[in-house]
Amino acid sequence: MKDNRAVLVKVCGLTDTVEADYLNKNKVDFAGFVLFFPKSKRNISIEKAEQIMAELDENIKKVAVIVSPDESEIQQINGSGFDYVQIHGEIKDRLLEQISKPVFKAFNIKDIKNIHKYQNNAKIVGYVFDAAVPGSGKVFDWSILNDIKRDAKTFILAGGLNDSNVREAVKLVNPDVVDVSSGVEYDSGSGKDPEKIKQFIRQLEINNKI
Ligand SMILES: O=C(O)c1ccccc1N[C@@H]1O[C@H](COP(=O)(O)O)[C@@H](O)[C@H]1O
Image 1 (cartoon, rainbow, N blue to C red):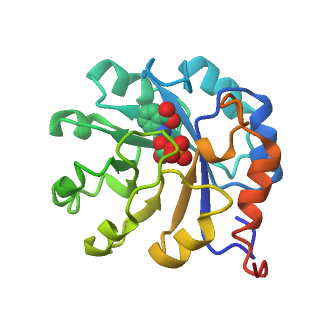
Image 2 (tube, rainbow, N blue to C red; image 1 turned 30 degrees about the horizontal axis):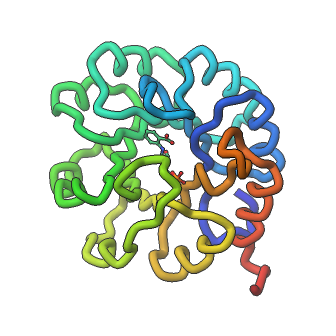
């Protein structure tokens, strides 16, 4: 992370090797890859993710983003070069035990009430708070996070963040990490836009008084 930034930044949903360079240049902290989820336009294979990861600076942490995984998916992630696993939806206790990487558990509003199940689990190192539909670019009512007890786990805010709302989000929610996907994509909706990534990051620079 650059010294003058207020929070860490995760850019999610990379689909092309060219995008690695945008993250390197902007000193992004986490890169996310959507896997095993064909419903998403950002879904890629592990092989493609490995190609993109090979182009990322080594200090950028690589996050496998998966939804209600099965055993085979967990085993494939275990055998890969990801640093973290971000899990949306359901995860059986038995499968959670099998994961060999630290986990960010994602909550998509309606399942936020289940957070207590994970608070004492050492494998869960962070929470992602996201809108109802992951990757939809929609903002949710951040005030529902006021009731979440802060603990030692990383607090990640996602859901419809962009260069116009991220400063307000940081001010109101005080997350450890801001997580963006749709908000840094080309207007066509396909692929990451280097200019939007730059503008997003600029909003988080402490000396940028806007
Ligand atoms: O991006 C997706 O399509 C996706 C699919 C399945 C699980 C998570 C997904 N994305 C996550 O959504 C948030 C932010 O999205 P956005 O900025 O609102 O577009 C982020 O955590 C992604 O990991």
